[in-house]
Length: 298
Image (tube, rainbow, N blue to C red; front, side):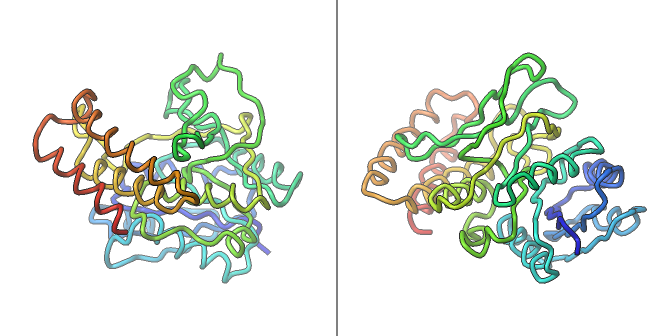
């Protein structure tokens, strides 16, 4: 039985997919199968996938429309489960990693088969940390943050530890987790689907997420979602981020979530005024308000 089903979602990934496939081709751990869900790419992604010389099993499902990251991940995860593969590795394809990534992750898995596992993630070709473990700030609505973010990887000390949150940029999940915690919430088109999933893991008390700083991968941050246009946040990012943050807060337990929503509404106003990443246009402020109230209706 194959031990790991690797799940990735492509959408106009032609500029990054070759590095990703090359990293998989070089893996010292061979007992895996790749499941690619393509969300209606309009570039050369499909051609590059089909023409690549691969030394591992490969499955491709092409959607006629872009159904989003959460729904795409669910499609692939169900394919893995249907093949009775016991573990899933959800991973971006705008990443690069060395030949022992899968071996090291699976070694950690054998120490406790109920653990979810996540590596340290650096910016691509840089000695700078993007993700060094993640936690929720529970007193402000379970806001997630990355430990060590922006620090120099070679000098900032990180320890193996259990964490609250890990991005699905690279997250190893035993398939038994999905039967208890559920799949990704498909109302999240992109962003916050992993936050929501990790929140449910935390609430279950039956599984833990183990952060392993000795396992490192490199992320081409923002290369696929186009979160910025020049130095300003894109309308797409603003819409998805605000809407999904509101929806995630609404799903939390307890009455404090209503206070958190009230405070968040004021926060987005302050961001528009003082944060240089937002264009100071009325259309942007209108989009922020619209996205907030869309999140209330999800």
